[in-house]
Picture: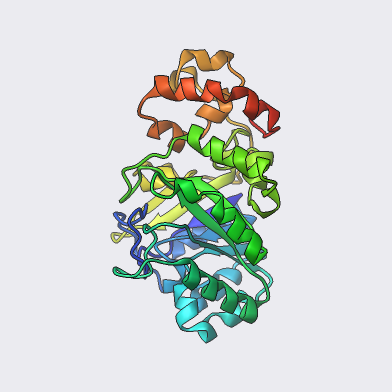
Length: 319
């Protein structure tokens, strides 16, 4: 079981597409009892901290988390606080149970401040310092939209230059973003990564080979992932999907031990009845967040079918 935790809504970036910008997330300075209870119930294998930016919660918070079990933790962070005051974080980041993932993309959407774009040069400086201090270069996530789709492959060439991996995701209409970058266009980019022999630098194992998030073709996200945060009124926001939780959907806290199992898709939830007869059924329908973002279902279906054979030839885990 993977537990995604938002310990703060604060962020020292000013990104124009931020999915969490409109959320009410309580800033935590110590691990809340509600979270300790959840950890004891679901017994996670790993914890992933997002935000806001998780480095706006002090390192002592994560040391307290590590004391609660033997699980590993990962922080998805812009690394700005580390870059400004590295001595504060070096000891924690060197812990073998702690992993770091960061983010960068070309264009002017990811903002270091309200006036400064997070440029490639600045990103390289952050990554260089991290490698010198911690001993490795973290992987990074890049968000693709209409504004930077022409530079999509450049993210992989950048990962190659830095000797790390990059995960490429399409933007979703969540939070400040109103744009949905269609799955079929992302497939074109993913196929180009294969055709250009860049897979070595592509962070794709969970999604493309295990059928995990955000493909979810293994239909197990609802039994293997949980997302948690507290709002300003100490109400628990809890879901099996971070995106769904951000949209305001909540589920009840699990009672007892969670047993991973494949979930079924209900026919009434499918994009079209024709999906039942198509090899791409799970790929198009399994991720609820992606499915809900589709505006023109007829066009979506048409475009996906145009790419069907190439998708099948790619040997991704789509069913």
